[in-house]
Figure 1: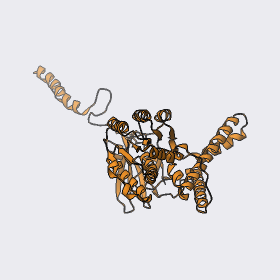
Figure 2: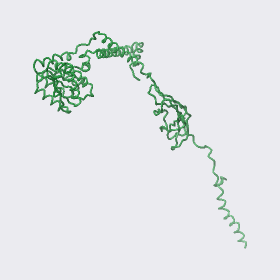
Figure 3: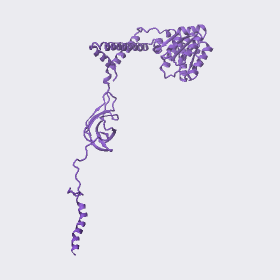
Figure 4: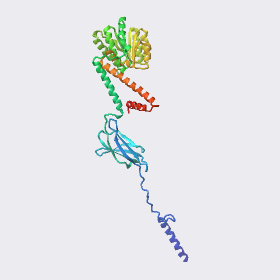
Length: 407
């Protein structure tokens, strides 16, 4: 009986153990297991954009606004930045997503004269976590580019020079242009063909009418056509492009009309051969060998076929007048032809042959422009060189550099 009473305290202690373990923490802590300590640090701060500035892009045609800002140094770095634009009606639009380190953006979709408000939003997992203040700006177009004032002044001066020479030519004053031997020999070449009773062969190059050299060649063709009509010599014009053939027919026909010999015009003498480069060269060489022209004009754009044509023409004993603006082909023409128009001489032919005051005035004005820039270059080089030893000349060199620099 006494043993039973001894077991009762042991049983009571064993039943109280599990209940105590549910409410008491680890030994010695005195903290209940269900109590959680509050997080006193709070949610982490996200770095946001500050000092946002918005301004119209200067020296442009409008439609653009520049945004600049700084990023806070403390806090969590956002995943990305969003540029939010608010229209005057209050409608918000996300116009760009930028890398977190970005500090500038150019909005190129703005409408001129409309003031927009902008703000930069820091994104965490695609959600807005922080936002900058707002900045407003309106895009506008500028009439004058401030970085090109020097070039505008130069342009006005050169335009004035061209107008001056045109006006001088209209008043009857002779404008001097140095003699271009190849153009001066046009009459002699056609006259030689007339004396020998042989045709004149005109080759306008291998490019189409969208090439400036072909256009210049058509001007000279009109002059040659008038001379052949006056002298009664047949004119052969083989072409490499169908459009060039059509234009050549009209130019030659007009030349014969101006000479008062429309009956002498033969449309079949202006023919299309082929678009193939060397096929065309072979066809023209065949015409040279069969017809044996006394005068050959090679004026226009030429490539690898230039020497083939020039050597064949030389072999038949023709007087040859050539001209091209292709630097790589000029040496072949100089070696194989009697006269060669080099580079810009081909383009000056229209003014040289017609003596039209507007064309001559434009040509003289362009020459004045070239002389002006040559003087600027020489002065700039001299000033920059001597300026290494005498600093005051460095200012002159910088000034000359600024007025010809397009920013």
